[in-house]
Length: 159
Image (cartoon, rainbow, N blue to C red; front, side, top):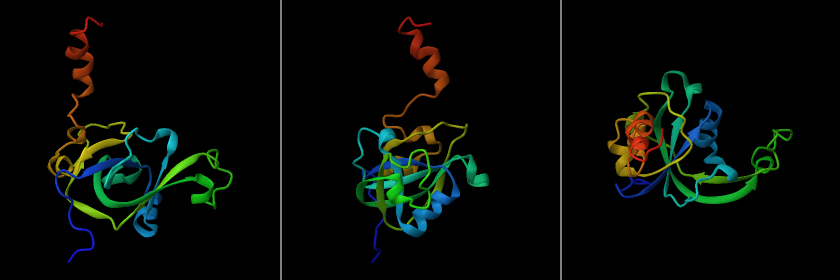
């Protein structure tokens, strides 16, 4: 029996940013992820955490590849989580420390066909499993930016 079975399609997933490989190492080896409280989504009640990897990941950039079960949330300062960085400008800022279980890889990573500025995406595991592009993770699906500025605003008489 697996410690953490594969999530059901309707399981709530928060897709968060992994800015650099060091953050992936922390998630994998220490079992937690930090999220600045001031940037946290209004709804932080997910069962699973998935990671969007930035350009810092080279060949694995701009994709969602890894996910993990969320075990608990704590509100701490950055200094409490990263005591080796006491002079960081955000050292005293509140952060959520999200304890996670072991990382797993998606069968097929979800790429961003175009470079995307991702903050957080609240989605389901079914969407994550079936998506062929990051924009398909938004629930309900969002139009690409070109469509939003084109037909979407024209219908509202906004130029």
